Length: 290
Image 1 (cartoon, rainbow, N blue to C red):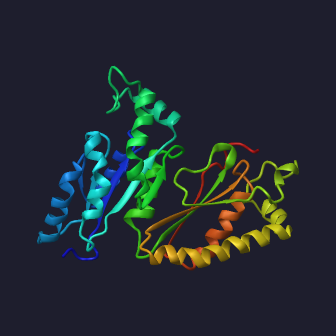
Image 2 (image 1 turned 90 degrees about the vertical axis):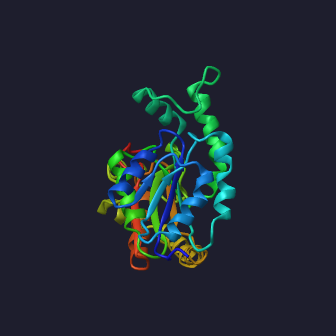
């Protein structure tokens, strides 16, 4: 039987989404890493882990470089693994336009392209092929707006140094830039009074005292904060009790500058005292001032 402290991390996702960066970060942290592992070998690897005298933490990458039939087997193979070792499945993805740009910049060949399938078609087909894998993910990371260093930081903060209990992340965003692909829960705060319409406040963000003072004067802001706080107070612990390791809570306003930033800051401050791993990210802050 594998000890409970032993960790098996499976990395998957679309090509160009940053899987190699994650695997390298885990290797730097002392994980034994295996790239492009056929899913059928996963039970044998788990068996070896349980029998080995020295049991290292393992990270494996399984993705579309395996045959389509091979990757389709992964959900069933995960279900068949011993209950004594629950793998953490990290799924990476990015917007299709971003993936196209990354392949164009590196001139790498996509694993699904051929003489009958364009790069755009291959990227779309890969998303469909991996959808059942994404549905089983413990943690989803949208790398569309992340630099390599920011992605490595997320892995260190949320995965490598993750203490016991759920890893909770608050993300502010602007709906005009799209809903975060990795969000588990989304709260829309666009109904709240908007500092943007005060020209003297437009250049600030939700982290600035002027915006804080504006929003704190509005009863609706306090009421919504309390409603969200109560909802999370009740349900985050339920997620945790059901062996959920990661939870991303996204707070959205129009542009991701004022209301969502303020609300995410306040929620982060509140829940930091309740959980040992609480992270904060402002996805769109600074992109514009709309």
